[in-house]
Image (tube, rainbow, N blue to C red; front, side):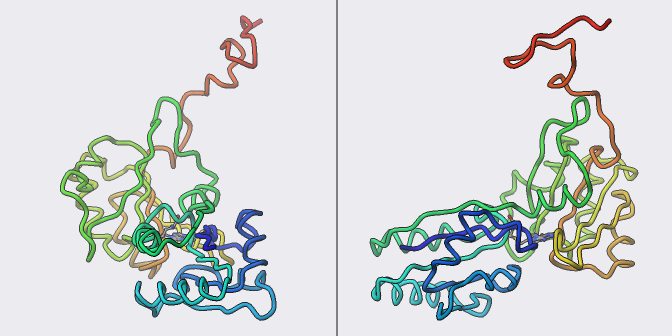
Length: 253
Ligand code: SAH
């Protein structure tokens, strides 16, 4: 059996209980070493075979899966954050399907959640934005034309931009072209939940300066939107005059 497990954003105690339990039972762990915190490997049992996939090709990862299946071993394939976002798991699962190997996926805390925690922010503020767009800039991997950052920016929603910290000039240009004002709040969150986490706050107009002064070019999220500054309308959920399934609304005294 093979388990794709979300490692969480960095802090080793932000893996799920299920993920940790599987790490403790695994005969083989293949972890995405460029981003997964190696401290998680301390949960492995003695004698567990451990491979860092950072220097491996897809075919080499498949060979490791197959070798373990031959021996009746259980493998954990450990991916950063939640595996469903930029995890390159689909291509692995397709090949496992072809070979008839069984697998399951265990979700994880994505880095965009870790970054919101670092910022003590809420992406969805009533009256400001009820939408979070998760995207990336086109770098060496293309992005579909309809998802060009300038088009996405035209919604003015909250934005979490992955894999793009080295492309700040382009981000700034597209965000401005799309309609965010230069004074729209923005933040760069580096290694959210790791011991060396850093949070740089500023505005869309400032993004290049924020990047230059911080020296951050990778393992960072760029977050954009009015949610970073603040307070929208108060929620209906906890509004005393609002009735919902669990509470009868009352007139204000
Ligand atoms: N599946 C992962 C994303 C993998 S893509 C997830 O759910 O978070 C790798 C990108 O994720 C990095 O380039 C960076 O943009 C972001 N990232 C991953 N971990 C991060 C962290 N701890 N802090 C900030 N950004 C992070």
